[in-house]
Image (cartoon, rainbow, N blue to C red; front, side):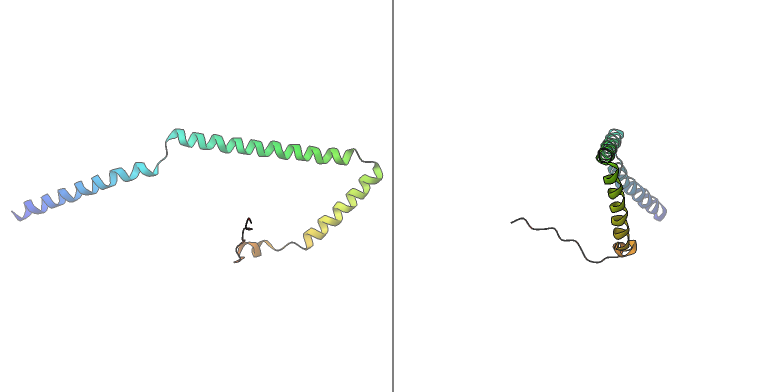
Length: 109
């Protein structure tokens, strides 16, 4: 009698575990269509970013090319100076990583 009760309890326990675990697994997985749509949107976003960067680079090059030789030389010198200044005043990357201050958003009034 004791063994029959133990076997019955074990069977009920196993059945309960199976019933509880079945609905949990499908909840976390995404369907194939959702994954495909997410990937497509990411690719579209990357493409728009690339085209923007290409257009920006082309516009900057055009602004430089339409100047006279003397102005191009001045532009080159001022770019070197500004790059040098910005490089020296930049904070190290580890300070940005471990910075505890939170950036606050400006209020609209």
